[in-house]
Length: 515
Image 1 (cartoon, rainbow, N blue to C red):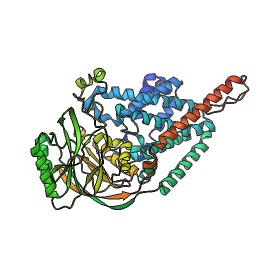
Image 2: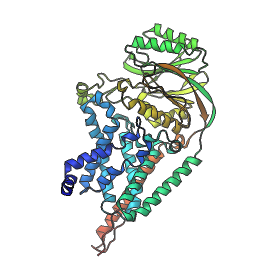
Image 3: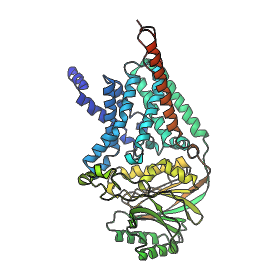
Image 4: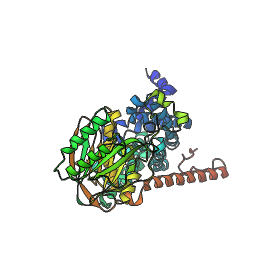
């Protein structure tokens, strides 16, 4: 029996399956399971597998297959829409983890020295962050499923997000996983591993405790209107209108409808514009609706503010579109995706700039759906003077999956990063509101809800360190890798010039064995 298990362990097919499975392990740390604590050890099996590979090339393959498993597990709810193309995308994006697997083998294969262990504690998390940076480009699917976003409901983590954003949380999670891996594989590495854990706890505790936080200065009463699953643009509008009427006399500052809440161009349907203006007068507040319709030049998704006399102020056109859902990248090459799934048959048009809107004395910055995953967009709106951040969304296509909960959780991170309350208003649920520290304000509106609810969100003034300095953890991680790479290059040059047997390894490579 033991021999059989040894043969299975050396089989490339079984090893590949194990790598994909190990890569999928962090998925339960995200909503809906939301086992946030599991993120701190979920990478350990993947790390152990890559460092034990017989060759660096095999370790890179383990990194790739683990990345495939990770992307597929975190985005599994896309399968009913994109079918086999979901696996293709996961395989393409998983390739970004191949260098990460190679690095794990380079630093941790066999018995790492204390020097290598210290190098691993900084290099492995930095390399992970570089992977998240590259794959978070909008054209590659955006920053959905960043490891740090699994910590959206942990108070100390949210305080840390105000310092370095979700990037700093990802770095922290991978540092802990690396330290645990070192504790498992080598006695000689235990001292630096424990020291790394202690230093991480001390630094993150100090950062979260002493970082400046915006001070609350008032309350914004925002009403979220969630229509629920209703087929047909006319029927959906009627339902939203009826729900909004219930808000009369509720003393609200702003009423928000979800993404695609209006399925007609208001310029072509003045009757709907008049009905919306009448609602604004009835509830004595502006309405923010989302128009998903064709107008001159193509189809846009636009946030439109409605006042007592109709549309008022500038509208906002969605800038970052969902790949395959709202456009097909390189359609001439990948257009076949429309024949195997529910990819967009026609590309929607993009907006060109972000907008801060005024609803009376309340200044707010709108986003549309997918855009709430991008920390730079909420940071820009905060810098432009938004008092409240707001995302209009719809996950109706993925109603019975983890997607609605995952999407709603992102607003907590954006609120904590920016020090501004954030409203996540959806067409069909989950809708949620968070305060300027990322804590939940009131209950979520689940996917079975069809209602209108008023939330009293505390507003704040001042800025967070993340708003001031942006994605600095990414720059630090890049600099760490450049420095370690330079040290390794110098070591190799010195090794080339020193006679064989007269040089003891330096840099972050393994030292030569003693005679």
